[in-house]
View 1 (cartoon, rainbow, N blue to C red):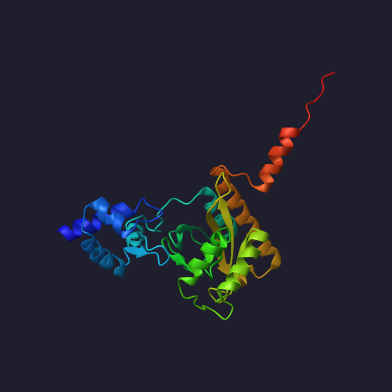
View 2: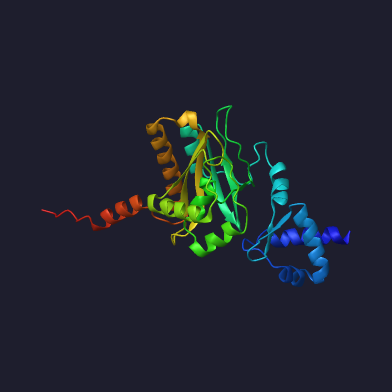
Length: 269
């Protein structure tokens, strides 16, 4: 029973630790010999209950552990209740809208509202999004330092999912500059053929990007330019609403607040 108890203790230690833990930290905190902990982590990593960052060698909770939580939840398998802004964007568009966060060195879908259509995009809670090819992931990377981005991209193969996938680190870094300049990312035939997606950042009160909101749809349903503009507007509104709940003022909100603050008082006669 001891290996089972130790494995559960490792998962409990990693679950509330977004920055991960090293082998030495886990061994020390759980009072387990380093050699024994290394063997235990190797098994957990093989079974995907933990993952190890190739850049800093820290361990994080893996997709296998998330899958257990997902399958024991309600029928549509949401790990967290979707923010009303996600639900609102999904209702207004009829398409799949999801929230993505960086978990260690991975971009992970953490909340999801599925499309009402029978033909929908396959995204699930706990799914890793490829850093170089998914709009949801690139929106997060766009606001990280270039050195950090290059370390992440250089630590894994950049697979070509379609003929349009960016597979060169320099090309991806260049694209991230475009994302920052326009404030959103678009993935069109780059990850899945015939799929269009738009993603925008969710910011905290300090301006830090905490997550991305993404809408994904079959390209034929959003082929019209005006419809794509409408989808971008829905995603922008959702991102602004979620950012506001974290204390951040968007440019539009800041302008309204400033206008209100400097509005002259009416003179009394």
